[in-house]
Amino acid sequence: MARKDDIVEALPQEGAEDAIWLMQRYYLTGMAATERVTWRPQFGPQAIAIDARYAVDELFLGGGRGGGESDYLLGDFLADISQGANWQGILFRRTYPELDELIRRSHVIYRGAEYKVGKHEWRFPSGATLKFRHIDSAHDAAHYQGHAYQWIGWDELTNWPTLQSYDLLKATLRSAHNVKGMRVTATGNPGGPGHTPVKQGYVDVAEPMTPYVDPVTGMSRVYIPARICDNKKLLEADPRYLERLKAVGDDAQVRAWLEGDWDALVGSFFTIKREEVMVEPFDIPPDWQ
Image (tube, rainbow, N blue to C red; front, top):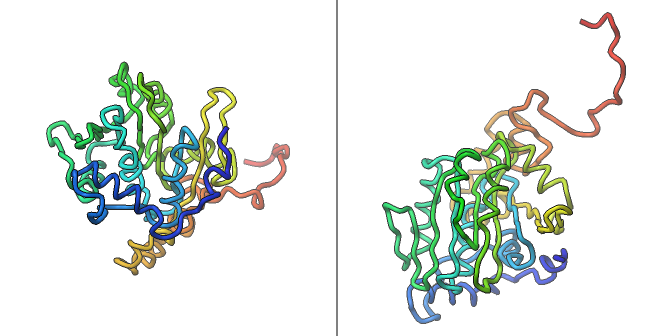
């Protein structure tokens, strides 16, 4: 069983992860491992999440806006491309236009691999492949029956109103080979139509960075919070992004996007759901209209 210590006992120091990314650079381009790394995780949630890839079956990284979640997904798949043709991945957004930014960013990180435009698929020199796909509903999930993937990613999981598609696609996480670290990874922020199922499935079941084992499936999962303050590269490049997040107006939305507050239910009738504003149940007086 996965333990919290498996995730946090060896918090990486700045630069400590260079070796793995130099190796992946080799598998991308065939260059000597001394060439400059294309990408490596930032110190903090990104590095912790990628270090935890063999500790749990499912991992959710999220919270505030701008926490580096999309980069994490692309980097997490990249971390195991050395497993070659046995490492096949698929990355979902709810609609195809939502994939645009992911695809653009992947062209920066995956330099040296081959992108098949018509197939929306990356092919790596090692034989690994990553597909970009959109899936709107559980009905669409039927199109993947019989497929086999060793890595499944979901970007902005809270955009789906339920986790039905997410759960159905777990049946495609399989391999006839001795593949290490098969997993489902996802990202998302508070709010959106899927806020409640994601919160209930990941945030509420255990403390952050504490693995939870589903008593029905036996699969382990963990929630790793990420916020804008963890994305040092973004803040260095665009220091005023914090001001724009604060300027969205609605206090609950600011808490959700800036602080990663899952108790600020953006878009709901009652904006806040906190124990301190709840009252004990009581009989409604007959004269209340």
